[in-house]
Image (cartoon, rainbow, N blue to C red; front, side, top):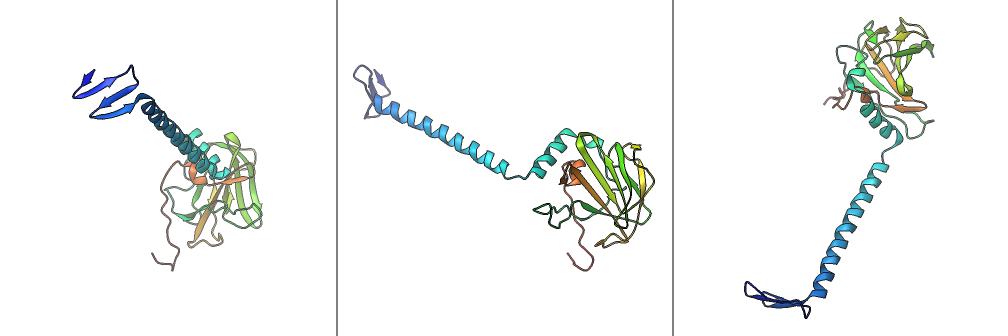
Length: 212
């Protein structure tokens, strides 16, 4: 058989293309080797993806599930209009170490604090000299708000956006007259409450005197 100046003889296991003679067995081995290399590359890429996913801590994984399972309309900012995030979520590497287990939102003394989602008030009172409100939500989530003068009581059902109290001044480390510390946890795991709002870019405001 001639193909464009080349010859092919299958009976003897020889192929001639463009003047080169190649045994069919060698060509088959080359094709098989290429297939094996492709499969090996796919396996390595899959293993790398699993490894990178495994590096995310349980809090980040849980937060991702919350975003997927809770549509944005189910949640909103506890201060309106949308507040500045003055201090971000910065959990400690171990539970017994210090860290920032929530976010600080800039506000004004006396500003209305609202339920970030519907649920049941499980605590409304004083903790270490500051007013705290905690709300239990579906899925084992709990949000906390402080320092707040509560206008709700434990056991009361609240809906998204309901006023739960007024913001008090004097939050430690707040660069403004008043800041709301907003927290979120599931069980004993503290999460970033901003995930409730949905995927968004948060622009942190510089502290007074730091410039930038």
